[in-house]
Length: 438
Image (cartoon, rainbow, N blue to C red; front, side, top):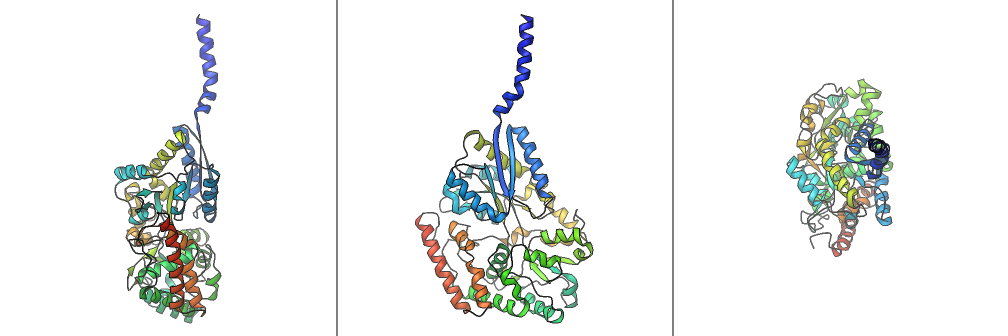
């Protein structure tokens, strides 16, 4: 009898790894290749460790951020694919193929407290009372400028208003040949700059109730201003920029000012510390309608409806656990990503006041404290609904500004045409019940 018990115990020990392996859930994550390379190795290791603790065999795939919407759409159509997708763009267009995350967002609010407003508008559709995404982080878009150039021109702290950007940026260009670097091509950084100006002039695509209000004196004034800014203080290269172009131009010292997260600066620190020491930052530029800077992304996870059972339970647990440890994500992004829930990264203000990654002076990034108060997202002042997401994806505003700058149409004509297209898009999505207003 004793021999049988020992034999049975040995069999159980030998079978245990296989039994455990069978119980593990396959759990896959698709997200973008981070602009700060040090982030991804940290995240992959964190995710694998999380999987070991939670009975999941985790795999993480990273692709170019521009490819993620297509990958998500393909997975939803096929009814299979990754368990989680991290979107840097509005994900409301796929809401019908996603699990509602009302429960996760409610639990996170109870655990972590208040979230940054722009993270709410990027994740919640009020018309159908649905949280389609769980946003953990956002990317502030401060001004990055060469202090030496702006100091000689009389503004060592950089421009505080759009008018100062124009007047002093033009003076720097005329004196040194170094232009401003705001893109006017169909890509995300150009779009962020254009939306920032339009909001700061008091214009917007929609109002807070999801009605199209684009064709306004404020929007026309902003478009006219941006076109003049290009003609007088920028080169023609901005019409053909890619998402990397403003970063590359700042690193090369070829522009005096860009609107962008800190990724270009972090790269320059590693390439040329002396040049990086001359890069400083500003908050959102003020215009007649306030001071708003468009974020280059709100980092929100979505769960396709084909994810079910234990895999779905794990996906939701992953989101809350990742949020709990989001201070580590902020740190390993080298302060590129900011937390949607400030309580999850309580060290952030201290890091901004004394940069752990070697800024000179150490408090250079302190101007980014409270960035959530002046950071806006696509759809501001309303939600990032499917209509504004489609309008954004079709690049109508940046194309309107480019056409005016090139002398092809007037600002009034360009805005009227963009407004008409926005109205048609909103009508299509409103008919599906996913957009309010009317």
